[in-house]
Every structure is written in structure tokens, then in C-alpha cells.
Image 1 (cartoon, rainbow, N blue to C red):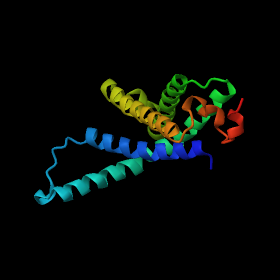
Image 2: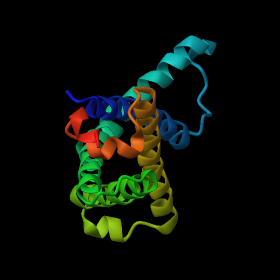
Image 3: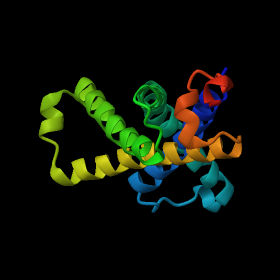
Image 4: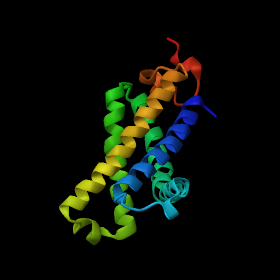
Length: 166
């Protein structure tokens, strides 16, 4: 399995739990009291709820939309000879947002998405903009840590180190 794909999988897992925790914190008022005054039980309850949110909501979006879109972006940048980090980041944001819009329409129908109140839509778009930004940053950091230059990573999508030699 190419190193680049492994980095994307690790970034996807870390992003899923990070976003799941953020969604939990934002969605709850944090006014819940600890069970019987026990902080450990309350902490385990939070971890359980974050895990459920992560597995139920975030993981499908990241692994069904995010990673394939990221691989598509790398492939496009390789074919167009564009291997700039900023272009990769912008494409990650735009294509993931479009993927989420298609997911919303498929799940809830166009009428629900079209009639969504403006504050709710802005809130949802913020949450779904946060996820690809964190994914891209974690993936970028992992590529830097493994020694592969992220700006040249798009040229190495097939895992062939010989394709990077000039």
C-alpha cells in the first residue's frame, strides 16, 4: 500500500475523531451534570457519545467522500502538472463542500436543503469546512513527517519513487 494512501487513511481517522469531538461540543450545551457527581463516569459518557457521532456521521463522510476526493485531487494535480499546496487545499475545500451538498440532497431531498434557514445553513457549512481543512493539515503534516515533500506528493500518487526523479 503506497505511503501516500496510508497517510490519507491515518489523517481520515484522526480527522474523524477530531471532528466528532467538535460536533459533540458544539451540539451539546455542556450543561449536563456528571452522573452521581463522578467525573470519570461523565468523561466516559462523553467519549461514548463522541464515538457514536464519529462512527455515525463523520466517518461515512470522510471515508466515502473525503478520501476519494483527496485521491481525485492528487490525480488531477498530477495530470495538470499543478503540485502547489494552496491549489490542493482550495480543491479539497470546494470538492468536499460539493460532496456534502450532494450527500444532503440524497439524504434529505432538495426541498429540505433549499428551505434550510440561513443560520442553520451557515452553521452546517462551517462544520463541513472545518473537516476538510483539518484533514488536509493532518495529511500535510504526515507527509512532511514521513519525509515526502507535500508539494511533490501529487506527483507520487501511484507510490512509484522513480516518478519523482528528474
